Amino acid sequence: MRLIEDYVDNCGGGSESLGNNYFLVVTPDYDAPDPRELNDNLAKMLAFHGRYVLGDKNLPLDSDDYTGWEDVLKNGIEEAFGGVIALPLYLYDHSGLTMSTKPFACGWDSGQVGWIFVTKEDALYEAPEGVGIYDWARGMMIGEVKEYDEYLRGEVYEVLIIKRTVCKECNGTDDEIVQSLTGVYPSGLEYAKQELKELEGI
Image 1 (cartoon, rainbow, N blue to C red):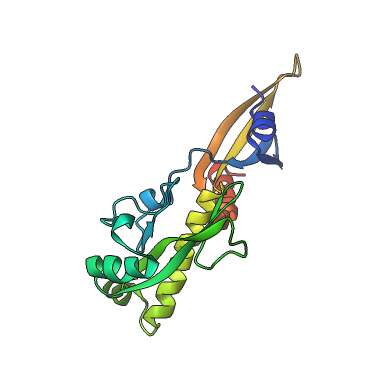
Image 2: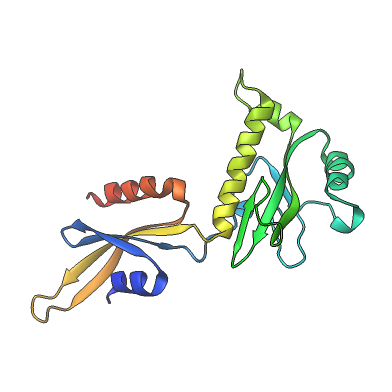
């Protein structure tokens, strides 16, 4: 079975030779889990949208109970969770979804859809000593939104090492996956590649 060509031609992946009939393949992970459900996130992400289910799914707030986003923050989030540090969430919906804590240039296909927030109590507990909790919390939340944005845009990958065996008689090939990692985000791609190569002794 020619897995390498299948991943590249049919799954939108890319490959590189590692020598000795080993190949490294990076392909989109179409089954990547939602990081808001999988990860132990410190911040909470509240988002409302008419067509998409976004953010954390278990927050006890309903958009119909509020008159606007400031009302959601003041009379919803702060009433339910106490003092918080919050950033707005903006969604751009055009041939795919992308999310940011800053407004998008195109106001026609984008707008605010919610808030990401952390309680001040959690920020005080988690922030490193000597670091301002507001700056630390904002940086942490921007990082969580960046990861969720990559998930929404399909920028999560599967990394595989495939060994190809060539038949000496017929010159046919057979591919075997010998190492793999799923759910790899862009920031972790190089680490994942190196880890798999070390596991296989390449």
